Image (tube, rainbow, N blue to C red; front, side, top):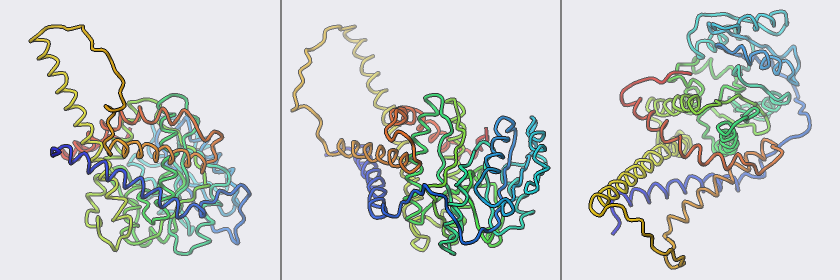
Length: 414
């Protein structure tokens, strides 16, 4: 009879397989709807759009970010750009000021209050029917905005459209591992879009109808994840969020283990605490797949990683303890038994195949995500970097986020 820890393990493995298979089935049902446009998109009309660029100490990237907006294939008289310096202590304001002469750019300077306060300053000055944000470390493809706006033109019920975000110019193993992760994220975001279950409207170029903020109010702190909180609020009010897979945004990502850890700690902490704030939504049928799938899926993922990591640590400790006791009793023994490979002794329990299935479906997600973002090489070493990097590091920021939630300690932004 299996022990309680084994039963828990089997349940978590089954749920993890269920999540990946659910995504795959969603893909099979909707694959013909996934269209990547190579030609320029023309709209019946071009609504005015305001894009805010909040920045804090972004002197190294802000200029390139702004120029990428100015090169968008969108009528210049229909595109308004707000550059907001949130109390930077470097040369960000000096660089922003260079763009003051552009007729479609407004610049703002304020005391540091966090990204959500900078975005709310933009909303206070908003005069267009559409509004979006672009992080100051991200750069847009010239066709990205017009492709996003085509989703609004197609469906008047669409209230927000998120782009495909990928890693800009990865230079080391940490960034290449994130490259694979972001490709997987593009695939998952598209599937969640089909399910009506997107839980984050990311800072890099998500576009909203102004009605969202008129009806639901401005951005909130959202535990330093305001882009997640506004998506939760939209889902709770049954506002439709879409994903435009062929609108590309390239973002700079953490280049060191320490910076990646701090970023992901903030993200996971934000997920846990926003989910707690919106706990009345979870498993409520009227909130659709967001409540029945996305949030439970996230909770299961955190529990699975935390439990499996704890079990590995326990087993390792138990193994080392037994070896220490063995050494104390009989001393060192350098004799080795002859290794015999016999298929009879291969572990063929079903959960091994389930784990292999999980990995195969993850690899499929990464590969198809790369295809959707038109990567030159569908198969890449990024995939090989992804598994060891995130397998080793993810448990630490997940467990730390849980601990911070319990003791009510807020993680730093940077």
